Length: 154
Image (cartoon, rainbow, N blue to C red; front, side, top):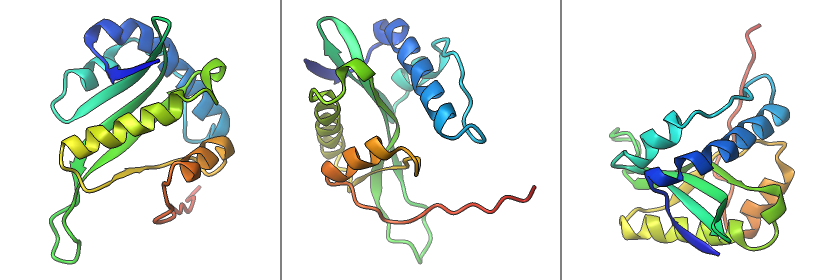
């Protein structure tokens, strides 16, 4: 298995994985997530950007997982300690490749990507009912730093 930064040549292979990712999230949280078909616009924008990348896991010439990672920084308010950090926007490994090391290899590559950019930490949001994903994050030393709370007005 090879972990690397995606190129525009990977867009066609990323589209079905992103479509699967959207469907998975829509199944877990249908009120907030939509099952959408990816046409290539999203990964192209990330691949061509200066502060984001798609990291891909390639096994036997097929992409079996990805991370969309983005460099960002805290707002510049006196009450907030300034940090430059990475956000994992999207992360998925195909069902057939789970529990075979692809996810851990992608996370390790993302950690190195962040270190190479002299960032202070990585963070991500995960759906509260994504039990397997949350266990994976716990096992890879991610800690819970806050809770996102929502009050519905309708």
